[in-house]
Picture (cartoon, rainbow, N blue to C red):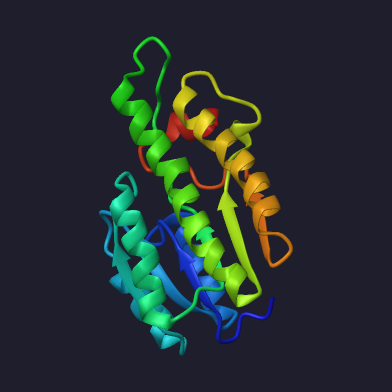
Length: 199
């Protein structure tokens, strides 16, 4: 897909991988809708605008389905179309089975998986009507090889992989859906030097 003049939605765009993805899409010529939750994306939006592309920041709590739908609706209102969806937003923290709570499970699944489902279905239908589109999900190698102590996170990322396969079949041939499942890329901000060395 040529990116010039395309519209891309990137969730979790303010920091880390989301920021890098948004900048790469802007460098390729795309205009951006930058989803943030608690971070401010204005510095990133300004950086993208300085590169000659449009960028709008939209705040949403991805654990709330109504706000996820509003994110989708706002992106369409801003540009009239969406060509690329990058479901990057995720939360990551230890959830050992012995102490895992129902609230932690719900937060992890809603943020990492349910929001990707809701946005994928909503914007995927738009892309299919447009005749083409791309949905890219950020998975994780731990979705295929679960890590001890991170049960909820690993299950959520395994779900992202299955979701991509299901959406790819549902929206074929107009919309291409893929999961990128990296290993360690950037250490979590909560990791100290010993944690990073262990990783």
